[in-house]
Image (cartoon, rainbow, N blue to C red; front, side, top):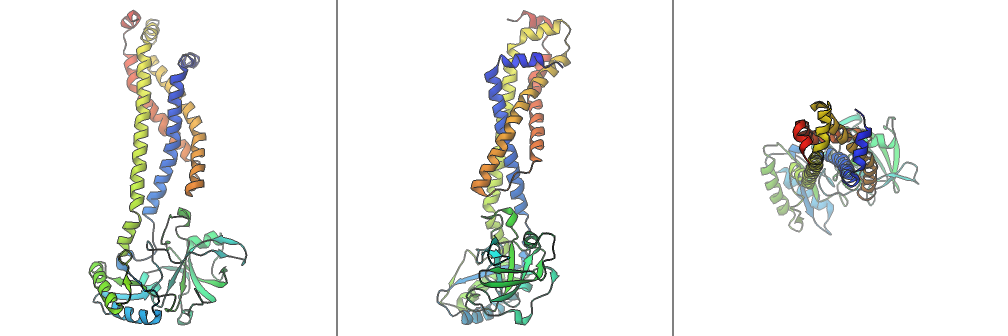
Length: 402
């Protein structure tokens, strides 16, 4: 295939060629970034929370000015009396609930390196939540000490494997130390998984498991939020009765209905917008590819109509149907290639904008060849019908057309 005649023909139709190339470029930029966002969000939908979600519910009471020790004693006693309850513990939050413990940390008491979420749990909280320890030791009775404002001055903690790799890449985190403000923390255990309450939120998907779990004696800091464990089949009924029991035990407190739910319901509600966004992005991709393919079909059909005489002349001097077909496919390939080159620049520009304003991660390079192959394939499919129609034009009819 000689490209000189094709380039000469395209130069005579600069505007139409430029419009299709720009349409391809826009499709390339949107396709790569939208697919990247969709895949990231789908991964978030399947995120492992690190807790036994199907067996857990949260009971959340708001009680300003209440005596924390008295509130905990009354409510936990009432919750344990509910038939079917297997375990109850005081916590400050659970995955997919309201954030309650974001705080910056340092490794040298000077320079902040990350902002994890601190889960605080009373005795039995880790067991009730079903946390999986993959290294280190369990908490002992003397680890549960009263808080000084927020934490005990010196606190043994568990951190997730993901967060440990962020802080000390390739190193054993057990025994490592870090600080949060004036509070000294020492890693005594590593968790397989423990998602933040807002995974994929303001801090992005990479920080979805930046979690720290700290033991704390229930009291002034740890009160009003309780994790309840029951058999999955009994959980809805147990939660209803647990809500009633908590309100009766603490009539001065207000039950937070939005947060007093099963963890599967909290997860469903948290990711509702994510599922909507995935659907919208998929719709944008389909619509954009459809418009792009229709543009290619329309332009190719127009050129076939305009080139009836030239096609007939080529057929008359010996060009086969395959030659005509390959000509239009090669022409389309050149246009799409120019669009992809421009689209590569637009793809990274769009990704930089998303990184700056929406904290989206950097687009991996392998999305570009995948997107290019998809657009080349789309272009060849879109031009196929007009090209076949051109290849079927009889030489005699073509040479008589004006």
